[in-house]
Amino acid sequence: MNSSVRRRVRNGALGLGFLALAFYLGFIVLLVLRSHH
Amino acid sequence: MANAHPSDTAHHDDDHHDQPATGIKRWLFATNHKDIGTMYLVFSLIMFFIGGAMAMVIRAELFQPGLQLVDPVLFNQLTTNHALVMIFGAVMPAFVGLANWMIPMQIGAPDMALPRMNNFSFWILPFAFTLLLSTFLVPGGAAAGGWTLYPPLSLQTGDSFPMLIFAIHMMGISSIMGAINVIVTIMNMRAPGMTLLKMPLFAWSWLITAYLLIAVMPVLAGAVTMLLTDHFFGTSFFNAAGGGDPVMFEHIFWFFGHPEVYIMILPAFGIISEILPTFSRKPLFGATSMIYAIASIAFLSFIVWGHHMFVDGMPLAAQLFYMISTMLIAVPTGVKVFNWTATMWRGSLSFEPPMLFAIAFLFLFSIGGFSGLMLAIVPADFQYNQTYFVVAHFHYVLVPGAIFGIMGGVYYWLPKWTGHMYNMTLATTHFWLSAIFVNVLFFPQHFLGLAGMPRRIPDYAVQFTDWNMVSSIGGFAFGLSQILFVIVVVQCVRGGKPATAEVWTGARPTGLEWTLPSPPPYHSFTEAPQIQ
Image 1 (tube, rainbow over the protein chains, first blue to last red):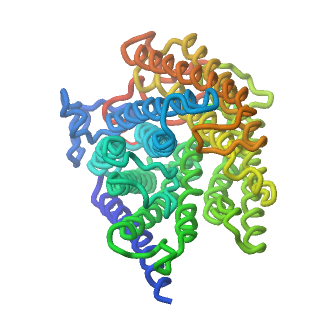
Image 2 (image 1 turned 180 degrees about the vertical axis):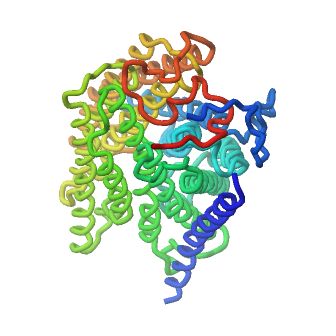
């Protein structure tokens, strides 16, 4: 794997990982906010 | 074509070893996609038999009315954990195993892009399922409120509740890491010239499935985290007494749960799209439209979750929206079934075991699809909801759908993996026994449901006895037939007639995997093949 592919793999994986984390926390935050109405 | 030898790796700048390690280290520290794929498939088979054993107890209890073998609490624990084991332990890991084995070989890559993460995502699973299965041993027993974990019922689970939640989190983390690996592998490791539209359908189906996984597994994790805080930390996300809303859990759960159904079937669509052209000796009819159909099904899967909740009560406009959007799924699914049929039309068909499973998939999955359409009709659903009709529906989708897809895939690629042909007679016998008894097992459940037999009960009114007996006999026979599958696989691993690189000589296998020798070298492609 050359360095540019390696970088794209790392960035892709980090991006998707953060996306998953955002979905996880996002739903919890959504319900916390909803419960304050 | 680059059938590179493992020693030809002078320019190889990562840490992969040229040869497998020996002993337990090979498996414990595995980073090779084939070894990890094998571990996933073996794990899945073990879980298939554990979940199957639970199903056998369930069918034995339901053989006749009255309580015979298990008390109602244990019965509910078995139905709940049968589902969790089969979904998260058998079907999903089997598809991840197939993805691990086949995606690098199909796209011309040496391995998955993130081999260490691959190892980690597999090794989480045995711990997750040991934790889940050990809940049967703690005070209060395992979860018994159904795999959907609806509160407030699921909050009544005994001491095993946090174990269950932790196990689900681990399964979710494993799936998300597997999905990330699939996406970055496909997006970055394709051989030169392999544009996305030239990619095999199995890899395409997995690319879309992986995006679904990343979108919805965190939602399940969020929902069960909130269940945990409701149980232990005094929050009231789903507790009406504290201002929360239990129906909200159902919405969140099914926002995960419906795409999850497609996570379990889309890779099977990909496998069927590989097998049918091979044994029809024709290219796949409408290959590009197949990709768009899978993408459409994936998109629609996000907007139909409310059809699981019609009887909860919802505005008429919402009922109509969910009903119509659900029925819309029949359009891309119809495109796929049409294309598969058109692929076989005037083809030079032969009926090797993978083809038999693919054809059975086509007929029997369609039955599950049709009963799904019936369930999508709001007023009809009011009658079918919580009956055995639903059980018949989703088992038709998952057993002759997803599991026949997996078995077809294993029979298709097994000679490639092992380098040996398997016993065709035994595999064909396995197919016929499975295909006959899966119908004996599940078809009568349609009648039971339409006659009003509720699901998730250990006892029933006497008028349901006859079809329950038929269903149970089908269940035991289907379960026993699967021993043949193990025999065929074990025999094939141990030896047999050598398989050629093409394996299905005389048929029309297309794809890079068939250019590699059988078995393929430890690192599939150390030099990228050129695609014309």
